[in-house]
Length: 280
Image (cartoon, rainbow, N blue to C red; front, side):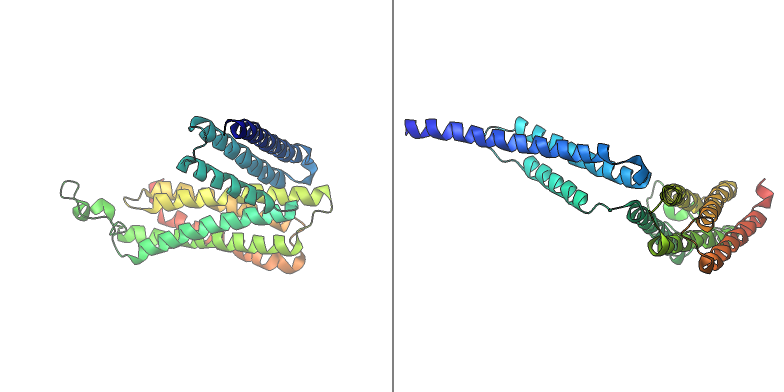
C-alpha cells in the first residue's frame, strides 16, 4: 500500500503540471492571436477578438482561484460554475466572425435586438392603458394607484405617438443597414473596412439613445427632456443614414429607403418640436 501511494502521487503531480502547462500555452496562444491581428483588419473585429480573449483569460483566472481556495482533491459548486464559464468563453471564441464585414453585421444585429426590446416594452406599456405601472401592486403608503404622476395626460399621449414613430424608425434603420452590410459589405480595401467600422461606431449610439428616450417617456413626463432625447436620437439616426448613403454598402438601388427613413425621422422630429414648443 505504501509503495503504491509513492507511485501514485508523482504521477498525479505530473498530470497536474502537464495540464497547467497546456492551459498556460493555450492562454498565451489566444492572447498572441489578438496581438498579432492587424489593426487594418478592422477595429470592430479587433474589439470582438479582444473581448472574447478577455473572457477566456478572466474565466481561467476565476477557475484557478476556486481550485486553489478549495480543499485538496475536492470538487465544489464554484469550480463547476467556473468551469462552465470557461467552456462558454471558449465557445464564443470558436464563433467569432472571420472578417470585419461579419463583425459589423454581428454588432448591428446586437443593436437591433436591444432596440426591438425597448420598442416592444414601450408598446406594451401603451397597450396597458392610462397607467403604464399597472403591473405594480398598490401600496397603501405610497399610493401608486391614486398618484396621478403615474398616468399619461392627453397631451403626453399626443407626444408619445411621434416618439414611437422615431423609435420605429430606429428599428427600421438598423434592420435596413444590417441588410445592406450583409449584401454589399466588402473587406477588399482599407477604405471599405474603415467605412464598415464607421457604420458600426455610429450605429452603436442608436440603442442607448433609444433607451434614454424611452425612459423619459414614462410618467411623470418632462416634455422638454423628451424633446432633447428625441433630438439626440434623430441626430444619430440621420448620421447613420448619411454614412450609409456615402459608403460602398449603398448602391444606387438602395438609396430610396435611405431617403424615406430620413424623411420619416424629420417628420416625427418636427411633430415633437410642435408639441413641445411651449416648453422652450
